[in-house]
Length: 158
Image (tube, rainbow, N blue to C red; front, side, top):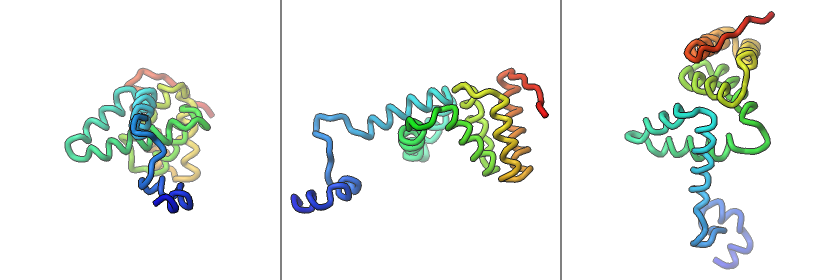
């Protein structure tokens, strides 16, 4: 094993055969979980936690993956702000056209991290070009529901 560890340390580390942490160190999965929990709370408030909690009885692993990977690894990367990440997420969910509940959560999240209603609408309008008018119309409908629920007023622009 010593020769293999010397020749292929990254491969063995990625495969979980060797570890770089001492027994007394915190498990990196715990760090991901904590980072993910902080990030999901900053973006979605209690909505994200509710989604994860709702998975506990049927698929707790899926909830862990959402927290650990999506929020602990990806959303918490430093190169983009949470504002930019939320606008990108709204773009993708609008383009998909089949994720209305998640789109509404991320429209809420975008508002929570400082995106303006006008920015959110513009990103959704942009998707008409790339994902089609039906996707953009559904995105506008989701935004309207979120804005109405939150009492957000927006004036249409040309």
